[in-house]
Image (cartoon, rainbow, N blue to C red; front, side):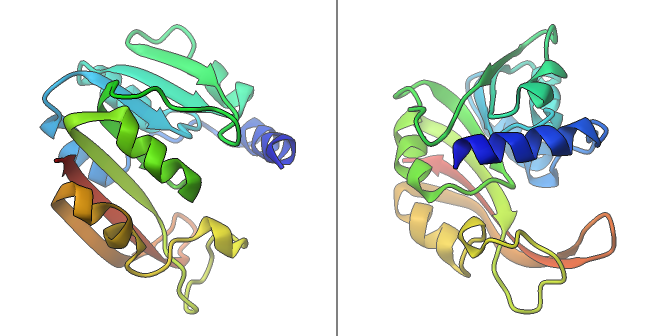
Amino acid sequence: MAQEDKIRWEKKYQNHPIPAKVVEVVKQYALLAKGNHALDIACGMGRNSRYLAKQGFAVEALDISPRALESLGGIKGITPQEVDFDTYTLPTNRYDLIVCTYFLKRELFPQIHRALKQGGILIFETFVYHPDNDKAPSNRAFLLEQGELAKSFANDYEVIYLREYWDVGICGERQMRGSFVGRKG
């Protein structure tokens, strides 16, 4: 599966410009982190990593696509690394901030929790399944269920922000999204 994912993402990044717009929830809450060691999970071409580095974070930017990671080479404050999340294990107690946007691999939830330092900030946002979504990932496994972020993280975190909402994508499609920001207790 990982090899298929890698091929699919390599093709996508070959034909798309680097997205410049930082995910809004990252911009609003990243600076709540007390330290400066950040992890950007499935960073893609690094829109969030770039923003975090400009804010003074030392960012580990992880993705399966070498093409995407090439765009981050040589940027001060960013350490890009190609990883397969099917086999990669996040280090324990390392990060002051973990960002994961528009990538869902539920098996990573316990690793994310262990990787975040006590008092660290978790920012998570992705698509939520709803039958009225105009366009979202076609594989239901890549979509949150309604209320899933709260069930997965709220017991172990001080909830700073939690929202499921309708948004409009860049092509005008309506999609339900879920956001969670919490401080690890």
